[in-house]
Length: 80
Length: 306
Image 1 (cartoon, rainbow over the protein chains, first blue to last red):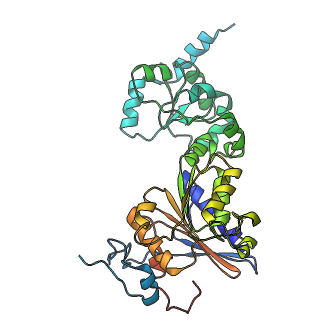
Image 2 (cartoon, each protein chain N blue to C red; image 1 turned 180 degrees about the horizontal axis):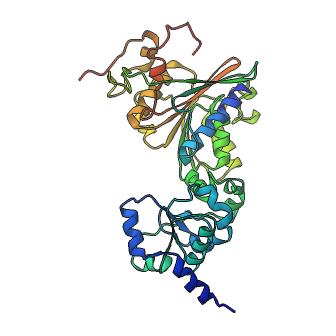
Image 3 (cartoon, helix red, strand yellow; image 1 turned 90 degrees about the vertical axis):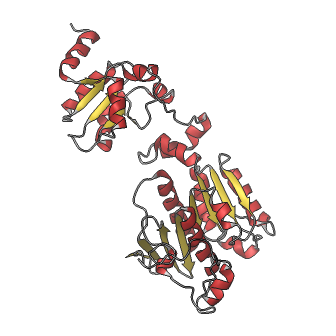
């Protein structure tokens, strides 16, 4: 039931993106507590120094091994 | 007693006109105006001026305020030959729109000059019926449905989140749904993974997804990707889709999806769940934060369930 709620909201956001209509959740994190039946919204901001989309751009390509990265946290960037 | 010719001549005295060539020039200069097609539906479906707004003359006074809220917005109306648009423009003027113009010669002059013409995607009678509840919504309409039918969405994971997302995207008529899932249906999945049914246990999830979606909406083309998404295949797969729907459940994939989507310039609809709590956002790195802005590095293994 919880995945159902979130999943259908995901479909709604996808359709809005495809149609270019409404306000998407870009920059907002929606949380849903099914037990207390509460939705909350948090503003989320770009991290200017993000290595993927900010000024400290390190990811000009994919990492070599994401499984290893998830285990160790070590950025296995391809060498140039 | 007046004739229609009299009505048109009277309208011409109060409504300024522009030729098709003038309107073409205006469009090219990206002037801030609304180009409004007021013909009958079958005329419109046979071809219209690209980017024109469509409200048939019969519904004009009732719907114009939904589309043009500023009474001082410049509106250029056109019809087939330049007569109906004059009368329609008068009606808008009486509603309080101050800058209404009629295109003389209408769509006939536009197309005779060899100008570009757009056509709505032809929909079958069955599709017109199937999606009729979308057409009633101004935010979607027939144009929106045509857009959905030509859209491509990638579902990463056909599990707890991918199932409901996939079901609704298919029902809504998203024309192409890619499904990435290397798993096989397990009985314990059925409590929530509604893309799959009892008869599908032990089948690959992508196969089960294809069957469910085909039965629900034959307009949808399901593209199976029965693989684990990884750094060797992500870029190639992402390239073919417009939007990524990420309902995965492990950090390696979350970071991979994030990085690949940024490189491929695709937005991600991100959903996650844990016990009774869920989270949802859209990552579009051209407009806002990405996953890494929120979570710059993965948690130590064992700390948080994937």
